[in-house]
Image (tube, rainbow, N blue to C red; front, side):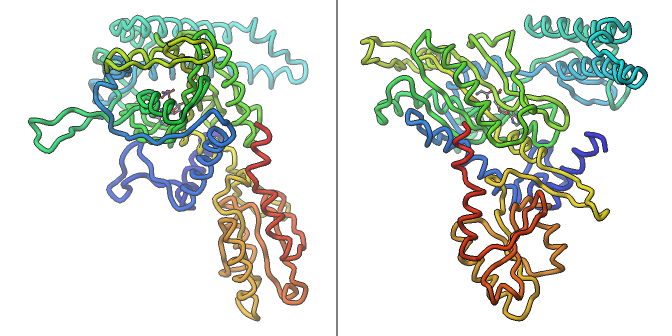
Length: 512
Ligand code: GAP
């Protein structure tokens, strides 16, 4: 199965089992907007809890807040979003389809690189064990030509975009002979900048109404509350403010399922530090955040850093944590050293002082900020796509299993009476009623035990407990483990402790 086919299957699976639905599906859907179903919301809440507790509970100098989506419109002028939160767009005149110019070019670069990779694969097949990839890449003319072309296009793209020379961006698309995937033509319009913020109006009478934006990031809610929190919480620098919440962006290229959405959730933390100490803290948070991701156990090799060479005007260091999604390595989290840009801008635009008096140095200053910003939906996709597995069993059967980290699984255990009679359901219900006080449990007595196991495998339940006739005598049950399918007999009295141990957040926190 190709990665593309696998990705399609996991999207279908997410719908079939109540994890994620297309928004407004009965009206043919709303592009790049999704709803989380009954199991999706449980998984999402567990990820939120993991992030929140790791930030707010484990760090004495970080507190959390929850700010409004609507904010004063001047905030978005101060932050630079009104002026510069844009995507370069181009239309194909024949298909009338609109594209992001940079994405068309990035796709073109990816195709060139893929051609080089295919050439390497061919070489591997031809030379077998004697194949020396490094030498092949350094000498094979087809590989060298495609890589050189890819690098040249990338350089020109970065240069033209950085200079905001939109005519040159269009010329590059024409020079690369990029065609519209729908019409197949090269009949392109000019490139225009398109602001990504959604706007609406506030006020009851339309003439009086003010344009107001749906926030494109949660961070600004933290910046404008910096002094409120610092003073009321008696916080001393260095300290952090964390927030989880919705953000909205009018993404033109909406694809790859929940990777790029128009309404999504961010988990952001702004860490306020002394000027000149920001790079030290930037390095600290880069490493800490990577440990947080790796502690989930999705596989250490699935993560890598991408350090930004070209920085936004307000940043003096920036890096992404990229994750290997089914469609390749892509940004999962951004860690940015944002200097004193945001607080200074708010001081300027609001006319209110955004300074902190440092009792240790006896100085007043605008703090510097290191930000960690991770997409909740992207983390969900990372967890979900790593867990999705189609397995061939020894007996020739197949099963779809979600090998979710147990501490994040939506349902922790299923309680299954072997048969629907002889008093087994009553015993099972009693166990269920007790364990549901601690864990999210499911009770299921319908169909054969094999079918019930498969249903639980498909939603990632780490443990199934079967109550059989012997249970009535020995007060013990069979526990079945999802990943190994091994079974063990254990006393009912030990159940809680065994499960508690395996789904504990504590063990994960100890790794961070
Ligand atoms: N406050 C900084 C900020 O918003 P960003 O790199 O634009 O930085 C941070 O976004 C994270 O938010 C990204 O790394 C990604 O995980 C998530 N994100 C951004 N746009 C998204 C979208 N359209 N859909 C889903 N997640 C998105």
